[in-house]
Length: 572
Image (tube, rainbow, N blue to C red; front, top):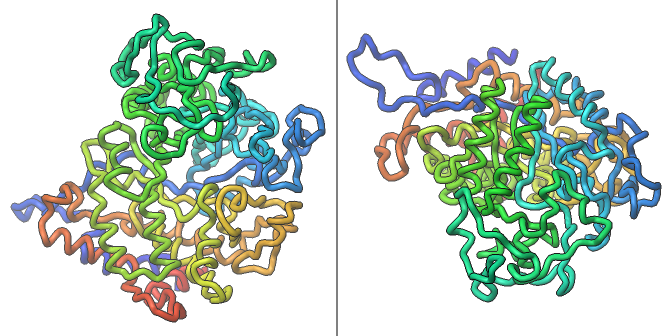
């Protein structure tokens, strides 16, 4: 059966519950139950999230990043998972056919700015991931040059695809030390409040979002005294980043309470984002990438670790700048690593940002597709979507995902949740997760390698395998789903069953966008919606999931849903 006929068959029952466009009502003399929510310009993107160092090595000449060959200096060691492995921007350019073949409309790159190549305190390990930035104005030499980025953006735009940057406003590389010792424990403001240069105690929150800030003295204003190695006093670019008074200087975070916003991430220098100098400086940095390179949007790292007032200033300013420079569909979404909608939605409503990554969806999708959670639980998840609805944004703008570079891969979750089930069931559950993601609201994100059945035992370095042939022992030990291939070879095959499934899902939802939309109850708060609207939302969730009932044995994974979607979609 053709994709078009399958899409039509799927679409028919969806129309019955209001997932298609609302009917015309001018000739009926009454209004529909509810109108569409405001739709932002980015509600139907298909993202491909990629770590450039781990994708493909298009130019071996930049492997060392222009540094000496010693791995503890250059950071390059293709046999270790915590070091640069050799991928670069040229490798991405060389494989754009492969990326676009998945149905990708937007490429999202992990941070690609120049990093501190090695931090001896962290393993040691290298800055291959991009989160230890020293120069916010140039591409990391291990990945190429600014000219290589421009070529990638131009090539992508020529194909009708967008390029998104992963950006950081919360911290820089670990450059600042303390005279009291390295990587000290966090000291609260109750114990040691900030003082200005004259010795007067003040609360930084009184100035957040304003145009002024007290002058500070690095020797007396902080609980720890910041110091710089003479060789690194001017390491950071732009130059304002070398001022130690523009950092919190309170010691390492434990990621909870006050220190979640004021503490250093494992020693990374935590910026004083309440200071307008930092707000202006960060906005200037990223506005320049928009103006000079035509970047189409930003994923923003560690959003919940930055104060609210920063986002209220930064988001609208950068969005206005982008639109004034011809980027009418410019889009920003933040990482708020939390699964509570009442909390994650705070950043799109109160904080005036456009969107956040949908961590609550990731949890719900894993519980259902991999863990066999009941459909009623999934239905309740979708019922609560109105937490995100306000005057200029809603749940349709959220990027949805199944796994990532920090948490781990969805294939790894499926294997861990279903030990001993075997490849057939693992692949079926993996497909079910992707089908749920593509047939739900939001912008689906494919984490590079998931389309080739990558797994891995966990998050962070264990979820960052190369798509090109690996020399890392831990990666060579991984099994891949749906194939007999290993990580000892390149894995860029368009014939992999998961690649084909994702490609077909992108195609059918592009042709029939109603499969990712609904109309009832979109404009109402959770407390004000009618019972009929709530029942319709629950019915929508059950329909989209095909009324799949979990089984204790785990053997009947996707019965109705698979019959109506993936098996047919996999037939050309």
